Image 1 (cartoon, rainbow, N blue to C red):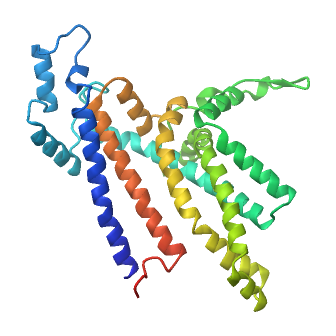
Image 2 (image 1 turned 45 degrees about the horizontal axis):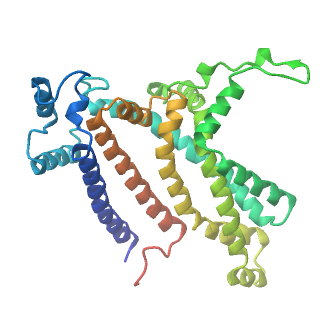
Image 3 (image 1 turned 45 degrees about the vertical axis):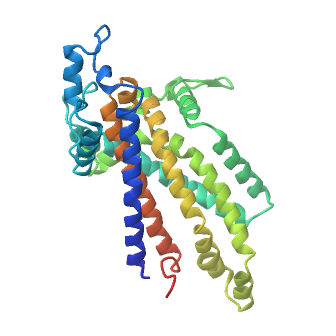
Length: 339
């Protein structure tokens, strides 16, 4: 089958995943032990009161479960996400997502870019120079970065960069970095300009380093292993025996084939970035969709939690499709089975 047929098949296979994930979200939120209508009531209000009945009607919980499920799923499919009940009361959820999501995407973009641009080259360099001092240093660094939790690294980074220190009798008081320059939400409205791009990047860069740190160490380790495996393949020896230059062997054969096992690693790390953004955005006060999800969860705005879970599911499925596209670009054999 052709590449387009392969990608179309993968797209169709993603639809049941979206349906199943969304169905489980609905069941946990609206059929679980926590009553969403009761969360709308203030303390001291009793269930079965007029206020409780009104809350049930607002959420559609006075309907039969199957009818409510069908209506809720239909609203999600048409992106009629309704309004918030506790967090930003009365605000349109679509408008909130359009406001908060770009910050999370900007943070995730730089997190993935930093992890790829640092972790993959260092892993390839360590693999091409195995059993050397550089290899041992890169491998040790990858293990250390992989072992540090994101939330701990975020707190340590703020503590180090946001305070002054006196080292060897030198006063660093003049080099204090204000915390407000390391935290806060980037202004995405001016990102099309050079100054706006630099300002938005500066705001998310510390958080991106923290969020991409674990991925960086993992990609470094997997990249080294992939290069070592490819170097020992028979076709590498055959190409060298045919007189192919070392530069061409490295760039055309070793590095390109070593990228194939890295594709699922990079995309799977992107899944972790989505979950990690909830903690990192909270620590760095970045008003992204992860921060919005955290606030909705702790304040009990369960309908908003369900809606944001639907957005997370779509993002994860989209990353999977990007993985399939990258497979067809790096390895032309993918999608050509049976020809």
